[in-house]
Image 1: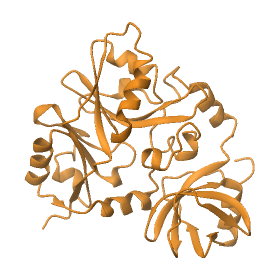
Image 2 (image 1 turned 180 degrees about the vertical axis):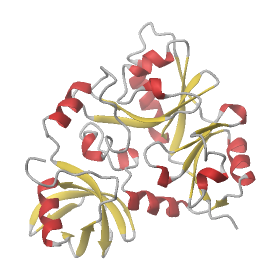
Image 3 (image 1 turned 120 degrees about the horizontal axis):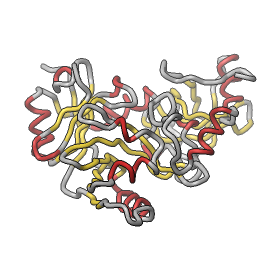
Image 4 (image 1 turned 45 degrees about the vertical axis):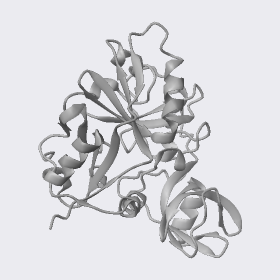
Length: 303
């Protein structure tokens, strides 16, 4: 039996940008370089406020002369509205693909099973795509397209359908945020949520909305908090629950499931906890940070 599992992600949907100006239109708005998107290239990017605060994140692929955005399903209309404000005279059309689905395959040998061992993007029948997640290959392969095309691709590759909780646990263990569940809209900055290490921001691409604040945060060392995985011992705190270290508020819970979650923690408190091997507390629950290998934190003053 194949070790590759898959599940459909009902919380994700697909948004399409067509028209001759589609690349230049999106390039001036998002945190990553749209010029990296190609027949063999996909990016992860974000749309920000002018103050550099998070609005939306999405994956961007291209197929059939359209840019395809894998984004949060319940917020697709908000995304269309926000992008539409910048359309002006640009030759673009903005469409929500209501009939499409997003799925993810994961486990040992996923890329090879789906024909992505030597490339990062595969084009499906009907205009959809499958691609290695550009944030971190360990999280697997994402697919978007018509349900029949996506399911046929997965079944032909011998992938086994599983409950979404298996993917959720892997995501949390790897420390990957899931849109507005973990990144508070109009409050969070990208760099405190790992976008630099996870290939979601390009500091050499030039201007985009929120670029100045994001760049200043990096080069002036203004990041004071980070979203990190935590092992949970006890009842799982609900999102937004304050985390305490030695009785003082040090962070806030984000998404979680039994035994594992993400929390936004002040770097100063994180360094203290790491140095003394002390847990954070939320009521009777103890939480222990477990930093993934990709995460780079300035835990010492001046770093």
